[in-house]
Image (cartoon, rainbow, N blue to C red):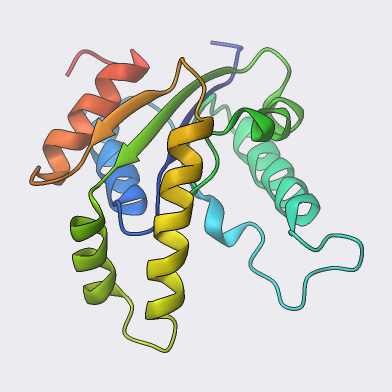
Length: 178
């Protein structure tokens, strides 16, 4: 396999992107499917933002390019990437530049009701940013719903197990018959 493939898992805060990404990895490991995992939240986690890069998009792309380059040199061709807005069409150029123009991209938008996202965020956010996360989550849920491309696969997470959700996501990739 020469062509890179990327599974982009996006969704509002509290939807379970990271948890589902790790479970997708577990399912692929069990099926002996080589892959790499990157939590996109960490690719631009710097403060303050670099000069001339207020949204941290450039540092994120540089870091993704460097990390993927290391994985690719080791022979990996499949990437699981989790990040809130990663599935939006305007972000696709970053993946094509970092992984290659011929990269096959599978976009999965995880969805959850406001109540489910709130419940999960209340459990997760133990510090001072709960209210900010709740507001941002609702705003980004609307943005993602409005701007996700037609080929984006939507997967509801309310009242479902992580394994069930991850199995649906792996099936969407075609990387293995689970």
